[in-house]
Length: 368
Image (tube, rainbow, N blue to C red; front, side, top):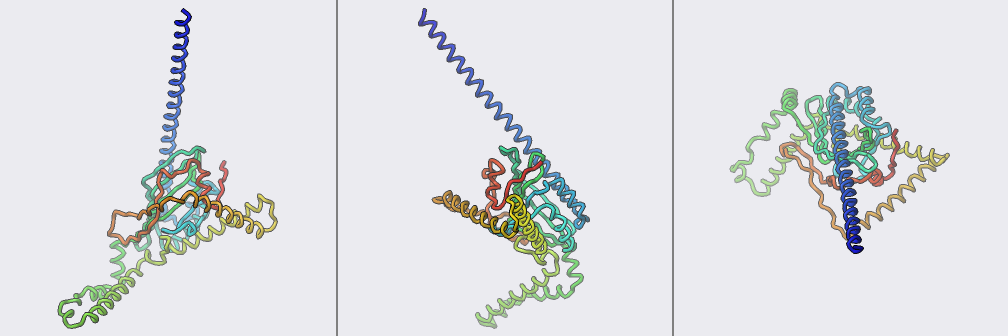
């Protein structure tokens, strides 16, 4: 009797433990499923916010030099102390510039001065995820098309990463251009040929069949090579002269943007750095701004050395990853490609602070 009751008690305890384990497992599964649904909901809300931002930005026709338009756009899109990073096409991080959204009115004014009448943004391949600190991390491919007054345009294809707070306002944006594509429409070509009839005669003379067999038989091989080089030089000169008539080919920098825009962003980069030094001076009660600058530079160098050591330890024994080539399905355009690494959703940080650690001289800012 005693052994039978002991077996029954042991069996009941075992069943109760199985039920408890099953209940805890089901609760964990339910929580994971709930978080997955919440993550999906927040990601969809972030995508909708980005589409709304895109629609607002695309309303720049006729408002490029209106500061009110850009102030309204910045107040809805960014937090007041947001940071925007714009990298050189295919270049290292030291070729990047940082500026704040308050610089957008000046950028719009500069674009209008350079005969840019409209900017269109297209986003695709949006990948969002909710981080542990409830920031939304988003990666996407952005196409920025600037149209000039002569109907010529330039399209910059870039990878973009950003952080959005719980109010779906952008706190940090990282724009890395991969390629830029100049484009000239038929209307612009017809207008140039109408205003410069001499261009027609230039291309007509270059299209003649000067390399006939009779000419080849009458001259030697060396003379033929010299003639071919001279002919190619004349063609290149004619094409360069023809391209100089379009706004899109004037003063385009290696960043894929206008030189004047890069100067404005570089000024914004200096102003942003000065604001950081001023904030450092205020927090540490430093009287001399030069002393604050020297201490900031010293801390930056020390932090950079520590990051380089950590990077060397992590990368030792590993192969260098292949660099992917920027692709475009339309090969008929005058596309300028560069090599650069494309970010992947798997490399997304778990928290926003992990990403900000990778940016030297950048600190998390508290938002209200």
